[in-house]
Image (cartoon, one colour):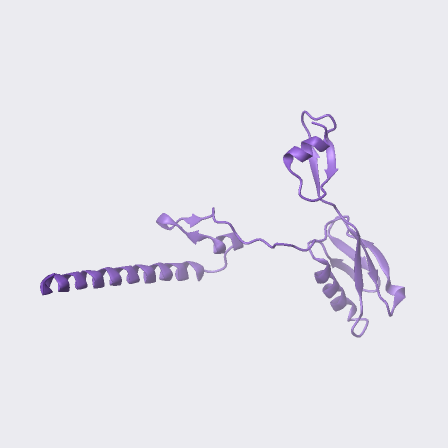
Length: 175
């Protein structure tokens, strides 16, 4: 390779390198502008830009491996105060998502996990007690289920116990 061809090749590589770096910086700048445009819904902020600056929504998102149970309407639990048993209660989540606490009033609990509920109860009862000790025992809750319908011998609602395949569900409903 002659010295002139070598210099031309080196300049060509430098131009390609500068072009790719500027494209990368430009894309990052667009992403910064889009992400700093103001509050967005969580789905929008997770979406990345694909070809043509269209959001990619087909990308898998991270899921919690072992998510905690969240309280629902109709769930019942036992509230225990080891040092103040007069405040012990058996509670059921009302249809509006609230519970009524003895000495404190109403508290919205629907959608909270047991640790979140325990912390909220400590916060509420700290108005009455100094550093309250509270335990929450979940007693009755909506258990996972599946519904078998169609051309099965016994259509209905069945408890879901562990991982169940469609074939197993059909067999349970005598299909």
